Image (cartoon, one colour):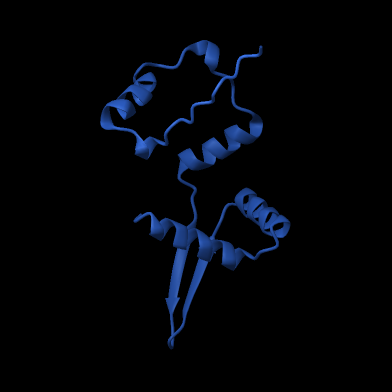
Length: 109
């Protein structure tokens, strides 16, 4: 007769008790072994360097007669990725920005 195994669903981080959370994140207290590391790809390295250099977006706000215009200067690679994402998900950049800002605000950021 075959044995039946029951899969135990793991709790989400926020459903855990403080002791369970501490035990779960204890693995991050020690350094990662070199055997688990790998070199970054060219694409990952470029993204890392952009984030490290602080070449983030610059934002300008122009307030007018009941109208606010926002100009955001984005990295070319990021803009290319965003446009491709918008195209595949049949949405627009302004809708993505709106959704993203609303998502951030819902988390109290």
